[in-house]
Image (cartoon, rainbow, N blue to C red; front, side, top):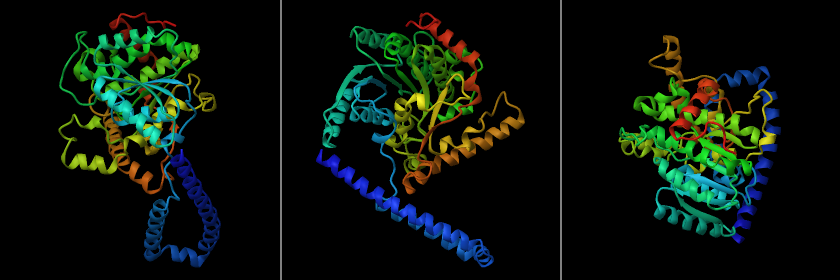
Length: 431
């Protein structure tokens, strides 16, 4: 608790100095702006020496005030709303975004269930979260470990059966985070591609089997998406699930958004809230399965330019805890929500789709190529700009438009129905 109080005191001091700096800066800035509006001022601004000096002073000032804590990134523990006493399931919690999401929920007082493939890794993470939480001056958190492998429908069913056997146990937050991006060609016993199974059908099955609990608690469902969903389309729901080339990572991320929206359409009237969240470019283990990104130049680039998992997890935490009633958009009648962080919620990314290649016109292809280069550039400067500016630049999570194809209600319903048939469940919600 002493550590916690000292941290709060330092935070208050730095925020006070920041306020004084911003206020003084605003006054001086107004005076300077008036001087620069005069003819001599305009002439001075046109000189290369002035422009160079202005850039140097701005950069030096940002680094100086960041160094002394006057520009600070918002901590993940202060993002969104309260979760004290709520029960949350987080899939894929043993590393990266899932780990930071689970730890943050636990520190904030939620009862967290670590739904993971390895009991050993789950137990180690449980001990780490408990020790870290206590070390930071908080009470010992309530953390459990439960076995769940989304690549196996049998494992998903066993997990849900165990949860149902828990009786009147509530479920307030479900974070569908677990996912893979690179893997060798493989199919499940049901004939579903490995990526489509782990990233989409596994979470779909998990959510459907927990429907009664989710509805009873009026729960929040957050499905972790990606900017990659903007680069593709799903032409056929069944092909996405059973054809390897139709079920790549980008297709699975589009399916995640379609699922999040269809859950909102079907369970929203029953009190459940469902959304998708894009954490941005994060240096997590999802890159480790690719020979190109696990070592060498590209790994160094990711390590240098992409955000740490704690930063990316802020988008997920915000989506999981934001007050739904205070974040409505009257123009969005179905209340379909996609949350994104930093430059990834800028209109330069959200204003266009990145479709290109087969099935697109030359104009669409060219626009898609330009969008792709823009998105890559944004991903490389998003975190550096946020860190240098202490979150003053691109530090917020906002609800934004997802890709045009993600709002295809007919496709979403088709994907829902095909998935229900595949796992032998009724198409209508079982609440």
